[in-house]
Image 1 (cartoon, rainbow over the protein chains, first blue to last red):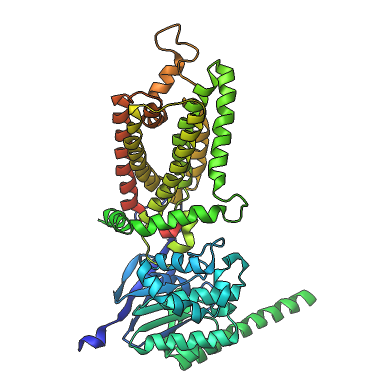
Image 2: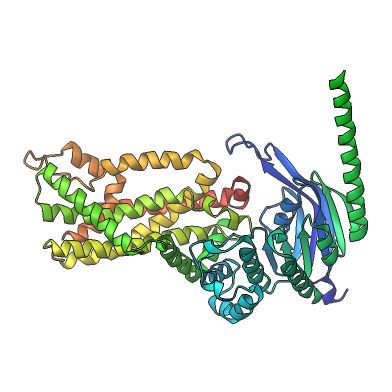
Length: 256
Length: 265
């Protein structure tokens, strides 16, 4: 295998993440807890663009945070080769009283950049965010879409090999989401890896080439994006129908 | 070792953390008309007012007692802020800690540096206030510098320990706040240990309290030099001992829980 074939690289091997529910005193060595991920595995080669599909609470965010290195897996392992950059919350690292300009420095520092690196990227960040003169206004005056644009611009200026994004593009308008989509594709074009979780399946289809369907912490499907979306929709429909049947039964019982 | 890696990793980024600390002070006061001048104003007001009141109650000379109270408050404000805010140093930065595998100690340094800057402001205010009231510095003021160093050293260990414990045990910050409220009155900051009993001689209850209360030694190592005498060697030993103990406990709990902390945020 050539060197370019395994860099960057991201793999999950039977990853289990257990949230402790008990207090620290009641926690034993392994402790009682809730398994948010119950043994998830996959392997991403250079250029892979993985979408995470699943309902609320299915483990998408937990998986992303585990891949980012925030959560240590309770068992199994995450193998990473390359620099990771992650955006899970658009406001983290932002100070409302500071101007957009100052927040670029604050968040940039938090992302591990030094002042010189931030200064070198300043113009590019401001231009991409389309904030214009608003950049010198304090952040509490921004609309949520403006905050999002600034956050996205700062994060994607970090030169990372692996980009991890959680559902958060929702606040952007159509034009900006399209611009963001192109930016993400551009980032993975140079053989980077992207993992994206979003409920916007159309956006996901426009970015990702493969997908992992999660259901209660278990990967129920992992393959081609279009197949995965079809699988997920079929699964959802059958669940909705089951719910309808239950409701109909309940109504029948009520009328009796 | 995880704890040492985390600690020294943050120490390497100390410039970024001190920049964040300095900015944080500015942002805190940004929407106020008087801005950061509030730091100086509120300090002068409290130490001047309380100094005057307690001088009346204890029958001490007003300029002398206001000076005493002002230098005491310089230290107490730092200790109180580090200890109480230390409990929430990590929980307050929840979203950042859940964002990327960011170190824990950086938030500790950032808090301690922020409070250190504020201590600087307060010390300056205390000096100006005291000069107006007729206080003149002597040679012993140079003892303030090592005093502040020991305070900072202790704060780093304490905040590390309290930040970790405060995250996994949310009752801890309540307990600390309650103890600190009491400690303020049990420490010779606004009162003077020998004000009532110096004529009797021997050990008064108040001077015993001052001797066995660890907080009074932290006050002493800075205030002593300012008031014109060298702080007792036992004060240096006790404060350095507590600081080292705090650092060991801090690194210990960081090693034990630091990696898994995110689950409790």
